[in-house]
Length: 195
Image (cartoon, rainbow, N blue to C red; front, side, top):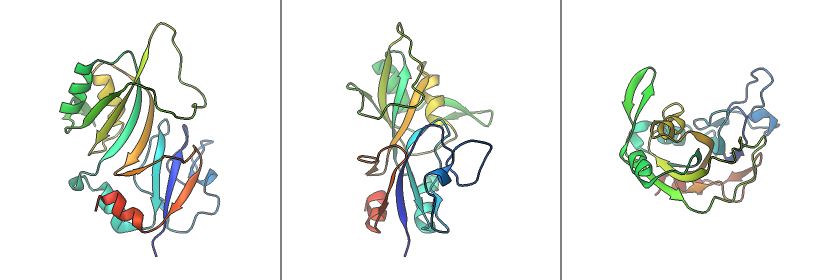
């Protein structure tokens, strides 16, 4: 029977079990992880939020294969007071660099979050500049290029300060504190795939 875990990856943790220098890895949070459990995709070392771990190879394929266009929602804190025009650009698609070549991102959903999300403080906190405001946006993508969100916000003039994956499909990190996880039953597959 496949196993599923929903993990809230903290900042500065690698999305892997194998050691790499003195960086924290998933092994620091799953000391007795069952065999053949792996993260579905990855979150960068400096990103936070929802990470799904499973031994269900079929589900992993459906979530990672770009042809399925599976939605992932990110909460993004950016430097500056982001404009509606910049958010519209993100939604329409922007040109970023992937492996040194220009790439036009697929259409996305992008909205300004007017009240900052209720998230745990980051350790260490983001840099604070008294004279430069920050904004939060929710960005839902159906693709996952390397460092895509950061490249997209930079392309419209608003560098990413903090990046949190809030949801994969309809599964969210709601109620899961950073560094903790919960086991999920087989019904998660239907929720993830929107069936």
